[in-house]
Image (cartoon, rainbow, N blue to C red; front, top):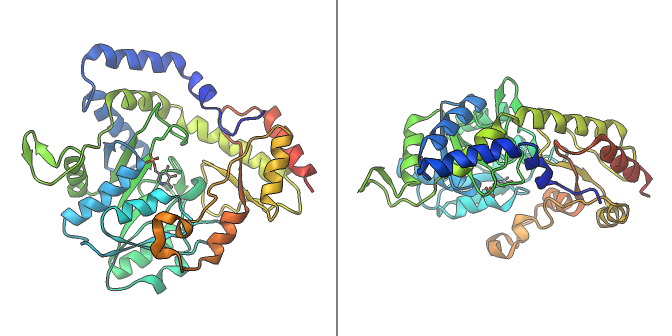
Length: 364
Ligand SMILES: *Cc1c(COP(=O)(O)O)cnc(C)c1O
């Protein structure tokens, strides 16, 4: 069976270095908010081209804390609205509602599956304070158009970069394309920790400092609390793991691009719609679309290929979001009914890639 994502093999590539880095932390006697965390923040900010990086406990917290910081800084208030794509992973939307802000869903582009800038303007009200482009599946959104709308209406632009570490838009990278950006280091992401982790990047010093305080009980100075904060920190062991893997991220992206190129050139099946990339993608996921999705998934499984669906249920049909129950998002619904993600990763062999293409092309 060709696995969807072989995390064991991915991390085995760096086994010696990971063990060495982990040992160093164990022996240091310092496990939270130490030098690994500090160095990782510096290295990751540099990787993105942004001024500041603040380590947090996970990707959801990164997004939650960006919005929370804007509230503390008086940019937003309870009940304000944040525009977000209707087909995103639920975490983007949870970050908004957890802050007592209102997620306003907009339909994505039906070809790229990304936030469609043409649909933003009609959703803007006097309560709209931010827009959250999600670089879904690894492809960057049309940031020039999104930023232009944001500037015109005075909105903050918060990137959800959980799937797009290292993806370019023009000459800049994900994490440096808006006012602030949230990253996840969940093990299955292109840059994955060996546990949970996340980071916020921004060029705004005040915002970075506020987020750092909020994630540390609301404290900048020990035992003095500025905010009613939370505990959301990137621990030393995960920071050390990430420092090792960050050195190989460009290589991981390069290999994913090679597989994607091979799929794009060689999958030929009239039932299957291949992904459209108009900016840059780091191919966190290679997502095809077909009206016979469930049959194709079954067929692939019978032929030794494991696939996944990202995502089977649109956010507005989730029981957690009863308030969206009556709304209709036909583009999202079609996407959720038709998408299927093929295996892709830096450890996938050419032999496996070829086999997947062959099975895909035989499906009727
Ligand atoms: C993974 C993911 C998140 C959440 O990250 P966690 O680290 O799992 O909390 C947020 N947004 C998107 C688009 C994601 O894919």
